[in-house]
Image (tube, rainbow, N blue to C red; front, side, top):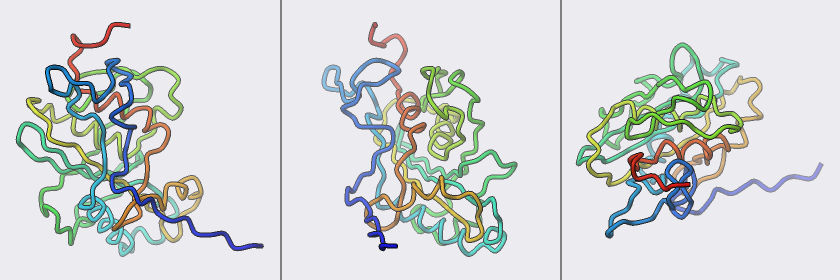
Length: 235
């Protein structure tokens, strides 16, 4: 059997989650980089990763690989993610793991050795809606997603991070940035892991971070829309 060529990581510095700033927002109807009187209508026109976040999620993965309680767990297959945001002049740092387990896969001990804002990371583990109704934007406003999104109920780390941010109900005066990085964890004895390995190995320097799944690509644009409902573009 011929050897396959190993896939190289993306060289693009900023891996995007949920599309680009030039896309049209499915929630408000505006192009996400549209401006009004010189100011962006969307405080978050797109979500990118960063070298610092890649370092954080890489460190978490290294700690997970040393956790003996996970090494032999056949169910230890999940996505992990980290998010940083500066909103209203305040900074926020969140981490999350995918799945609906009684306890999150990532524990505080798995943050040991993080040098980027150590001690400031908070677990995000909100309940992900079971269908397209009753979601929460990062601004803390209720919203419904379009019907027909495959996997709309998936408890992915990316949507947990954004729902967790929205659940803070922050004072939404200004947004400097929202950034996010994800990585897959597949334990040495994990079973039924083929569906997750596709997300391993696409990223830029510093770690093998992951791009978003199709369900997240469809859901994230709704969650990052912070345009007030009375500004929505009429159909």
